[in-house]
Every structure is written in structure tokens, then in C-alpha cells.
Image (cartoon, rainbow, N blue to C red; front, side, top):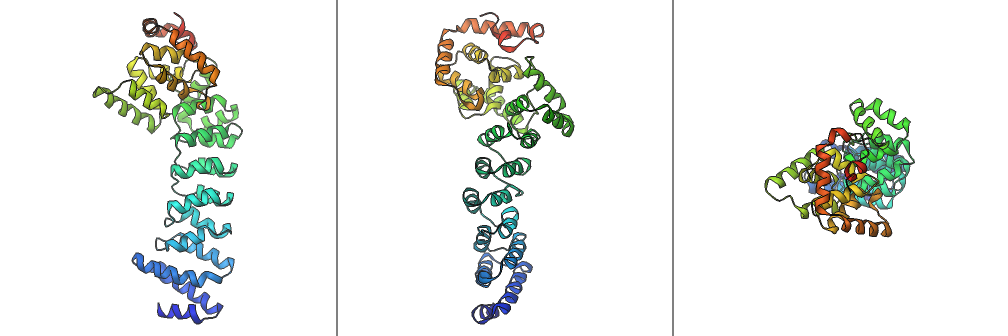
Length: 365
């Protein structure tokens, strides 16, 4: 360490560069405490202060692959305006903290964002920024990265951007964590070419895709999308609530309000009771009458019914005038009559299974 300090204080550029690589090699090869790593970082940082871009690129690539990389120096390299320096650190380093990554995602160039999108693991707060601020290339990269995790809001942004981007639509459709209702929306809007590619690349999705396409033309399908891990988790969650006697209107409102589609659909399916695929279709149907009928049959309040309407609405939005009309329609419905509609549908399920859902549920009104 003393020799390195002397190289920093007295050496010429050539000797400083030799000292830099010597210190870097020592750092990578050894086993050190965080305090010792910090000391190495201070020395290497001073030695690297005046080196050329090519040397910084080499240094960044070397430190990006080691768990001995000093935190401060790693951040400095990640914030470098030269993407060739920043890229390996942003895309690979495990020593780059979440705060630094978030700063880069919010403030640096699209190339910096692209590097972040390729990390082995990208948490939801980061992808929330990438799908809003990122270029087409950045969003495509994030969607194709199996290590990237997306929130409900993040998936919603992916859906919006995929409407005009077939490459993105394919990547989103192939994600195993895509919520079932959003998979249905994606297939409903996708081009025939995208549907065919999804069927070729994921043959296990073939039946679901076909049924989703059929549903767009009006027939009830058995599934809206691939059964994701989230769906089975939702089934367990709701089943436990029911076993404890805690599955009630408050829970339905909570699920719908926080856009937890799977939990909402499973809860309604258990309480109606109706097959899960029928409830899913009711929530997503452009004709909003089925949602009102389901809600009224359970004697739910208007705030809960409204939460269900927003959950299934395109982009979770309803015009004020439309919402007011739906409210009037909801209050006109009779609980007993709506329960009779549900009972009739269950008893005649096979007979009317090919009919559009709003006709099947509303036929007796």
C-alpha cells in the first residue's frame, strides 16, 4: 500500500498507470474486508483520475466482474458519460447499489438505460422507470429479459407500448409472469403475425391463444392466458381467506382497488359461484352489464362495483359520463333478479356456452 501511495504522489503518468493495474490486480486476487476494499478504491480512484478513456473502459470491465469492487469507484464508473465505460458496470456489477441504478435510470442517456435493462436481475422500481422513460430499444430489451420484474403498472405501460411495436408484443406475450387478463388483452390487439409467432415459439400457449382469439369474435373461452405463478398464488390466498371466513366485500374491494385481477376473479368465482373463466370474461367484457349483475347478485355496494368496473376497463379508465350511467344502471338492478340470472346461467351453462357473455348473463333482465 505504501508503494502505491508513493506512485500516486510522485509518479509520472506511465508509472501511475502501471501502479493502477498492479493495484487492480491485487484487489481482484485477494480477500479483503470492506475497509480494505475502500482503501484500494481511494488509491485506484486517484490513479484513475487522469487516465485515458480506453484505460477507463478496461478498468470498468475488470471491476464490473468482481465482488471486490469499491462502492464509490463503481458508482463513479456507472455515472461516466462515456457509455463504453458505464456499460459493463451498469449491466453486470453486483456492487452497484439500488440508489445509484435508480439515479442512472432517471437521469442518464438511453444507452445507460439499455445497459441497466440487461442486468441479471432488474427489480420493479427500476422497470417502472425503464418502461416510461426508455426508448423502444430499452423497453424491448427489458421485456425480453427474464430477470426483469414488472409491477402491474409496469405491465400496463408495456401493453400500451406494444400496441405499435410487434417485437415488444412478442416479448411481452412470451413472459411467463404476464397477468392472465393482460395476456388476453395483448392477444386481442395483436396482429395475426404476432399470434402465429407466439404459437410457434411457445406451443404450450397454443390452446390459450386460440381460445383468446375465438373470444374476441364473441365465443366464451376456457382461459384468457397462460396460468401464471401469480394466478396459482392468488388461488391459495383467496382459498385461505375463505377457510377463515374472511372472504367478504371488503376483501373484494381491496383486491380490485389495488388492481389485483387474479385475486378479484378467484374471489368472485367462489362467492357467485361461477367458473373462473366466466368471471374473467365478465370483468373484461366491453359490455359492462355482466360486472353490474355479478356485483348486484352479491349485494355489493356501489364503491365496490365501481372498483370492479375500473379493474376491467381499458387502461383502468372510465369517462365520467359513462360512470354516472353505470351507477344509475347498477342501482336499478334488483338483487333477487340478478341472483336468478346467475342461477339460470349455471343451470343452462352447456346450452348457452356459445353465446356472448352479456347475453348469457343478461337474458332474463
